[in-house]
Image 1 (cartoon, rainbow, N blue to C red):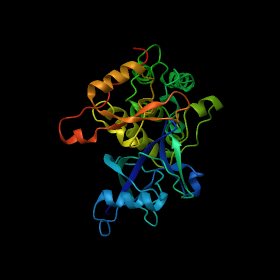
Image 2 (cartoon, rainbow, N blue to C red; image 1 turned 30 degrees about the horizontal axis):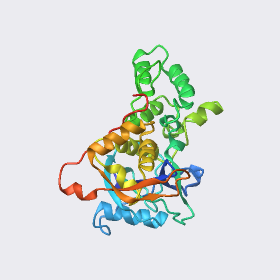
Image 3 (cartoon, rainbow, N blue to C red; image 1 turned 60 degrees about the vertical axis):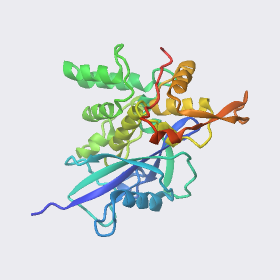
Image 4 (tube, one colour; image 1 turned 30 degrees about the vertical axis):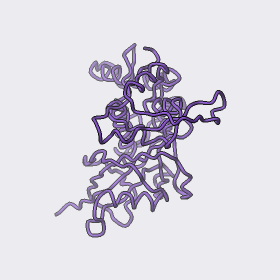
Length: 320
């Protein structure tokens, strides 16, 4: 008996809203999902779609009324059982779903007007990832729960310490996916019980809030993959400028980088690094809507992309 295989396309569309990193989601139409958030998603039609990317752009526009700009392929997700339950695939009920994830960046976050779409903060799904105001409160509850899970198993405890910065271990902001996969393995997130066909484990209100909101299928894993990729790319490609308007202040640029990386940056060192990289140019005019002292406006020197190799931005942490 042949196994039916469907290629699904999912999009992580990221933007910056008032110094917060946000993602475009759609509300699941499956009653079993109880209105859980989903990424824009749909099946690839080899007869009707010329390319994956064109199909993805069409899905996103159809589901959210939003037209994508910058897009790059993220990862292919094909593990058996990863699609349980399957995200809404229309009339198709495949035995196996291979999902190709994409990362899309938007310089503006318009109101799409689509009734089932919504821009939501990344922190709603990953409360433990935002260190801009210090160590997140969510880590206390998660650390205690991981301690109970890892009790007597040193390998488990070592991973928990390393990934969640427990017992004085340093924080590595890029390991978003590994952190999510660990709490999934530990059975803490709702998706783990759902995928195993088990009732969700009872959790205190504090732990439930610390674990963030679940998503349909494996969309939270895809979202964690995208955030890991984006945080890593900040350092070796000028990708943050795809999230900025044509004209911006340096303070707005720093807040955008901090929102993505989830860590506070040293203002003077950030600006020195930006000056050395020669990535921005002053426009000779100021922004008077800052709520304080007028700030000079800059633009990204996009013309240098074809002239020389261009790196990303240095992330001088505030503690440094």
